[in-house]
Image (cartoon, rainbow, N blue to C red; front, side, top):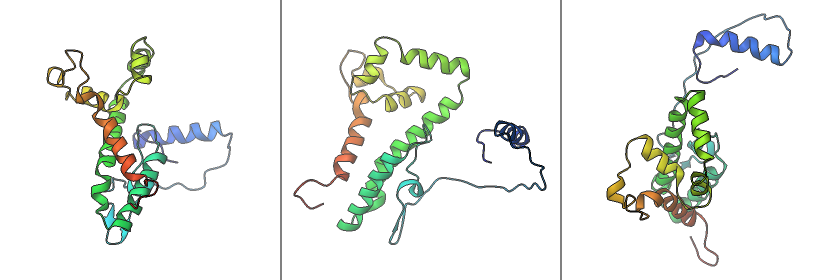
Length: 189
């Protein structure tokens, strides 16, 4: 059993809860503990081995999703092989995007129930909801900047009502990745 975000001494309680919820009433014959080390991928290419998808770390812990970044990493790996390009350079922006999502997850983990309720309530407010769902606003990058104090309102022109680069940078970055990753019909990569 693997449960994230708990202390080792809480594991027995979670184990008992699991057994009870699954209605498993078996005698425990043996127990053991094993230390598990996990980390992030630092290098995604070693000689002729390129790591893509889950093995390359292209999974966001914000929602646990990795299908789309995994597919992009596969296309970028194919392009790196076919065109003799540096794979690490090709995936740099994609890795940065996943880092931002992971940092957002860490920020969300710090919220209590009241904080989460406020956040959900904010997302449902008129105006905010339309801004999030019906605009090209990159909510992920904007949230990341706000949470980490890197949101210069005046310099970006947002204070005067203009759409500054702070609004669209992440969206443009990912779109560039997608366009660069997908083969153009009738053209060689």
